[in-house]
Amino acid sequence: MATPSQRLRALGLQLPAVPEPVAAYVPAVREGDLIYTSGQLPFVHGALPLTGVVGASPSNVSVEAATDLARTAALNALAAAAELAGGIDNIERIIKLTGYVASAVPTAGERFTAQPSVINGASELLGEVFGAVGNHARAVVGVAALPADAPVELDLIVKVRSGV
Image 1: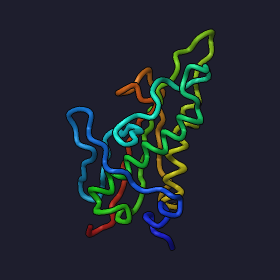
Image 2: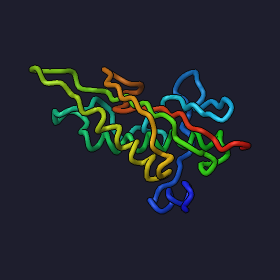
Image 3: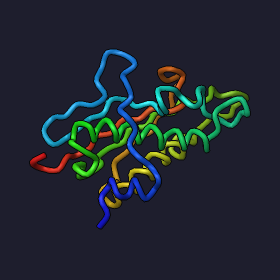
């Protein structure tokens, strides 16, 4: 059976360096066999590839682009968790994912309600990397704005292998 690190390589991915916090917090905290990540933005080399709200208007970030950003944010969250776990292969289970999507303000009676589709990018990546133990509980929330004008943010709770 392939390990998470082997699956990442097979996907052509690698964990990035843990993004530097943008405020007064740490990227993740370990308590016993659980690691809680702080909210992770989809930074790539210290910058956000896209900013703004997600929605149907051409001036907004598309659902497809936001879904890709959710995958990136998940990689950043995994990097933060793996750092405290002693490597991604020491993560035994993904317990919970909470996703936040900066959602377009309703106009003319239309509301943006595809937040779950956006965060599926992160959920599907976790399944690809961890297999069945990547299946997780999840909450998805639409918000007016996120730090640094990011379109998505997410956090994870993961379980570390016993004795690590």
